[in-house]
Image (cartoon, rainbow, N blue to C red; front, side, top):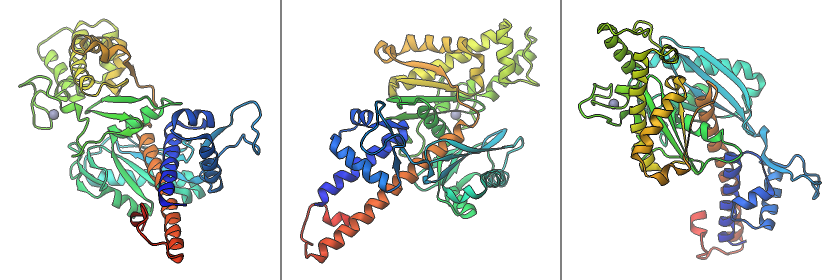
Amino acid sequence: MPPSILRHQEWIGGQLISFLLARGPATRGEILENLPIRPATLYGLIQKLVRHGVLEEPERRGTHTGRRASPVRLRPDQGCFIGIDLDFPCTVGVCLDAGGEVVAVARRNSPTLKTRRQAQREIEEVVAELRRRLGPRWKKVRGIGFADPGVVDVQRGVSIRAVNLEGWERLPTARWLEQITGITASIYPDTAARAYAEAAAHRPAFPASLLHLQFDAGIGGGFVRGGELMLGDAHCAMEIGHLVIREGGPLCQCGNRGCLEAFAGFGALRRRVEELNEQGVQTALRAADFSFQQLAACHQEGDKAAHALVQEVGFYMGTAMAMAVTILNPGVIVLGGGLTLIGDSLLAVAHNVLTLRCLPDALKNLVVKRSKMPEHATALGAALLVRRRCLMEKIAFRQAARNKKMVRFRESRGLVGPSRGGDELR
Ligand SMILES: [Zn+2]
């Protein structure tokens, strides 16, 4: 078989695995609708991947499936994949099987997480807890994905910097994880991992493009298009918390003034409540024990100061969203984090800003909604991302080994001339 045909088969095989990773189980008909592949080629490819233990069609018996179309899916027993989210006040670890089902969750409260050493200890303890929960299944763990709280070089597995964590700077975190566990590790920005989990939750199909924005102590975002994360060439894509919303505004922890985070982050809102308390404004909001829950409850009870604060923060939120919509034109925006506890009235203010500032066509089919994912969604996203990496690499290694065999065969027959693709295969 000439190498050009081999290359085409590799590409189609990669597309099929990538499709099933993004979409979950799918019938042959659904695969044919979505991938540029002939029925006969797909039939052969599925047979081969079933033989190699990568795919299964549990409802198919021989060539007949009965009336119902039989779904093709990734074999769950190809390994387990761990995701860890280092967060305040709770660090979470999740373990998935290759089919994407959660098999174990471990949590550890970390109310005083401040330094690199504390953070690494948290991670080690969550890993130990997962190991205990998995028992003999731990041997099946093939990859660990870590959701990093700061800026990340995904390719090199390096944590570049997290402003809230002392000493969390230029750390070879993936290598460190591999040393303490003996398992392949990857790291991702936590907001990107969360966006990936949000997109994956849109089964049976990834939305064409999804923007996720998280509003907590910090504000960040992630953008997924066609099942791929957009990370940026210098690892700084979607740092939406540091969009300057108003020139000369309050000081942000990044050193700039007027960033979205300096208006709508948790610390910024608590400072605003402090000002209101100092000015003697009549309100049930209290800076001393301020929380997003308190703001949501006061707003719900008709507190005027809380209402004004929600209007203000909704305006800034909408301003940042309008910039993102203008540049990215997403199909879905998912909002998450403590601030969204305020509910639909906050979304209504932000949506109003979108209507005033964006092209009508960009908004026509745009869906804006609040996240409904569980607390461990970010860890889940990191586990899904490392599952994707490991399974795609598994296919690539198998194909590379087959190609090497093919080259050796060609050489043994004296067929070492300038065939298309021959050089790159060796
Ligand atoms: Zn900033």
